[in-house]
Length: 464
Ligand code: F6P
Image: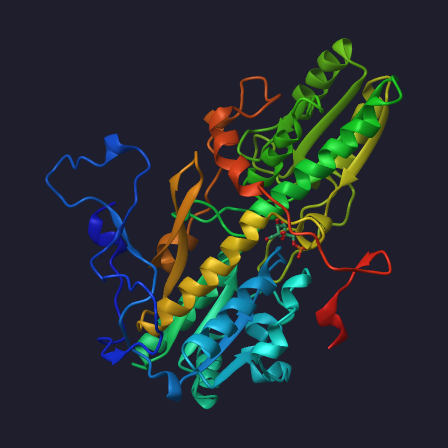
C-alpha cells in the first residue's frame, strides 16, 4: 500500500466556521500512523509513511448546519451497541452542530426504497435519550441490496445531505454504492459508513465495534458451559457453535474463558483452518483419554478441504439469505451426532445463535464507549464534506489499551474479509496464543449493567 491509498476526497473545501465551541480542533495534516510495528515505518523506497486521516473536529466545516438534513440507518445482522451509535450521531448533530432535522430510516436500505412503504421518523435528543439501555436497533434492520439509483432519488427528494450507514461489510458496500451514485450525479451528499459487526471481519480497522461485547458474551457463557460440563465426572462432549461466517474472531474469543477459575475450552475450530470430520473425532477421542468432559468451540463457518461448509453435511435446511449467503447452522449438532455415533460418550450441541449478538445485558463498556466514538467521528467526517468513507479504529497500544478513530475510503475496508491470523492459534488447536489474548482482552473490559425493572432488564425503546 502507498501513503496515497488512504487519501480521501471531499465534496468541497470546508469554509464555514464550526459552531462547536471549547474543543481542541484537529489539524487536517495531523494524520494517524497506520503501522503497529515501528520496523515497518521506515519506508524502503523513500515514500511517505502510511497514515490515515485523523478523525476529529475541525475549525471549519463543509455542510452548513442550519441547512442540513441528516439520515441514519442500520443494516445487516444485529450487533451490540447499535443504539449507542444512533444516539451519539443524533445528539452530536443536533446538540453540537444544531442540525435541525435528523431522520431515522427504518429497516436499513429498504427504508430508502419507496416500494417497501416504510416511513422515516424524525429523531430528537429526547427520542434517543434512553435507547442505549436496549439491545438491537431502534431503527430496525434488513439484509440485502437495494438499487442505489432509487435510494439516491429518495435522498434527493428528502433533501438529505448527510447519510450515516451503520453495519458490517454488506452495509458498507451499500454505502459505497450510494456514495458512487451521489458522485456520478455530482450531488453534495456525505455518505459515511460506520463499521458495526460481531464478525470483526473488516480490513484496515483494528477491530469492529460490536465485536468486544459479543466476545465478552461468548467467553462468559463458555465459562458457564464448562462449569456445567465438568460437574458430572462422566464422559461428555459439549460442542458450542459460534457465529462469524468465514472469520474465526468470535470463536477465538471462547479462549478468553480460561483463567484461574476456569480450565478453558479444549478445542477451538476456526474457519481459517481446513476441517475434517475424521481428524476432529480423533482429536476428541485423544482428549477424552485424558479428561472425561470435553468442551469445544466451533465456528459456524468451519469448512472441509473441498470448500464446503461442515454444516452442509447435516440434514438441517440450508436457506440462502438476501445476499445469497448460505445460512450457516447445524454444525455443532452434526458434530455432536458424529461423536455420539463413534465415541462412547454423552454429547450436547449448543448453538449460541442470536444470543451472542442481542444480549444487551452483557456488554463490554470498552466496546460501548467505542460505539460512541465512532458515531462522533462519523458526524465530524460528514461535517467536513467527506463522502464514501468509513470510520476506523486505530490501536495505538495494547498495554495500556489506547485507540484513536480515523477515516478511510469504504472500498479499502469492506472488499476483503479480514481473517484471524492462523499463527495466533497453537498447533494442536487447543488454545489461542498470546497475540490473540493481547488483541482481544482489552476489548472485553468493564461492564454496563442494564436498567432492571421487576427483576428483568427493561427495554425502554420498545415501549415508545
Ligand atoms: O453478519 C453477522 C452475522 O451474525 C454472522 O455472524 C452470521 O453468519 C449471520 O449474521 C447470521 O445471520 P442471520 O441471523 O440473518 O441468519
